[in-house]
Image (cartoon, rainbow, N blue to C red; front, side):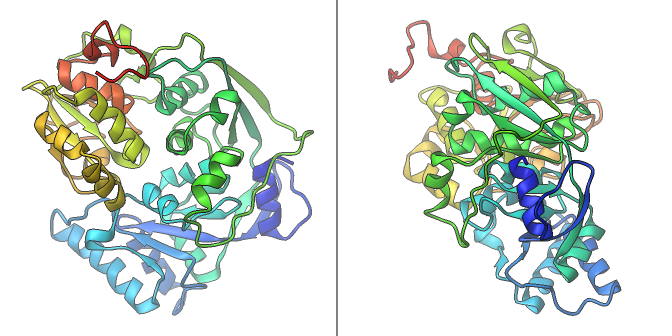
Length: 428
């Protein structure tokens, strides 16, 4: 079995599963946010619910419209707040403690390797980076799960992605997953699991891995699992709030197919509007003039992402025409950035610093685009109208490309703002 199949088999209480099997499995966690959880809570009560199946396994994170932007969003947040208090939920964050859910849960050790979890948010697949099987569901599925602690799954076939070669400077996890989506297409992995492996992944940081698993859904995948290793253990074991289970695929595990990516000589890439699969090298899109740069979100709002951006912005100013938004994904990331002096760099460069929020990623608040405007963003979707007006455009890229573009006022490669004498590992 693959490691994903092993997790499903364990949770279903059977010795083995195969693609196509339908199983009823016990959940280790279920997650909702301020958009999806109110409907789930309504379904919970309509089905006779009075008490959640386990107050330590139902997680609520009001992260999309907080601080509340209007009366409707305030009412949504109030529903979560009152439910969390009524049910005495262990994992509920509010005010100065709340962060972007898919950055917050791994950081706080709430989700651990080997978990089976669902979330009423499509990017719940993020936790595959830890070696968990996690996937997005609808609000009514979440409501039923909060009541019963179970969910049914059709065991997906698995596509194995192998990344090999020498990773060039400036090429990040974001570039790797965009390249994979470009090859697979936005429906190329529909109802499949992606198992992301190879020597390049072995050397990738946990932040880079979380970025890659986060975007598995952009190829249609149910989840994007990375086999846990020493990097996983180092990240998890200092913060895990439950005992992790480290699964590995069997040597003879069967895959639907294998896709190999040789990254040697690869350039940073960008996804052009209006699909994450419209991927081209940044060098072929440098004529795109931008109005806004967004560095943050559940995809790229972690400390490593902010460090990459700050390294390029240090001692420079962003273009006067580019609104540059910096959004640490969690309060801890915000504090780390503050202590490391990154916030001073961002403010000196002319950036706007936001509290943790998903706001602009889905056109909610904090950085909405007007008609005809263009943004480079480290977020995960660039659909029509995703960040604002339907006649606006979003270009998906890494934090380094977004920072370089903010300085140049157009899509740019990081090396364009370093100068010709820059070398890897040499501070300028």
